[in-house]
Amino acid sequence: MENKTRQPTNEAFIHDVFESIAPKYDRMNSLLSFRRHKAWRKKAMREMNVQAGDEAIDVCCGTADWALSIAAASGTGKVVGLDFSGEMLRYGQNKVDAHGMADRVSLVQGNAMALPFEDNSFDYATIGFALRNVPDFRQVLQEMQRVVRPGGQVVSLELSKPAWPPFRKLYYFYFQKILPLLGKMFADRYEQYRWLPESLVHFPDYRELADIFRESGLQDVRVYPLTGGIAALHIGTKEA
Image 1 (spheres, rainbow, N blue to C red):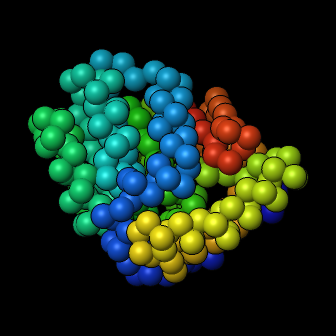
Image 2 (cartoon, rainbow, N blue to C red):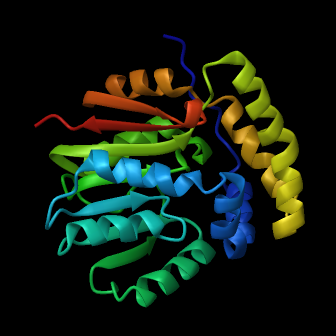
């Protein structure tokens, strides 16, 4: 199979992008996905089937929405949200405090390429809408697999590429032409929202990403294209 790993990306630039869009991040997610991102995350939670007491790490956690969902499903388990953006974590911490979950949800500033946790520490490792933005997504998947316990799950919820050519063409037009204009209109950020669509161009489609999950050693890989393939959920299990 052709190696689709992207060339190293300017991490400082990506960091600046997310630092700058943090104040409007949640609002823009809802606007730009037509609020579908909430339904996609609910689908992920159903398929993960989190049990009472399960522990998790949400990599590139942003403003902590998924970390909070996992903590609510677990009931008593500890959940870590990790992100390299201090601004994202600041907004996330406000949510954690507002939900009264500071005793179970810990937010940590760190690098997804080198997770600061020991092997076999969590039942789940999740990453939402960020795998395409890291310098080496294969390395991130390996790190997520490393920190998950045997039998645990590595879960990615990510934008993808529609399989049906007419829909894909329409989707790309919206994503590349309309989205940056909405970013400028509602968040006063044009270049940042122009870059985000570009981050998808060289990223694997959902079929290729499923193969990469398998190549990384994950088993029983499940893939769920969402909303015509504009997003996809991938779940792989670490060998028991």
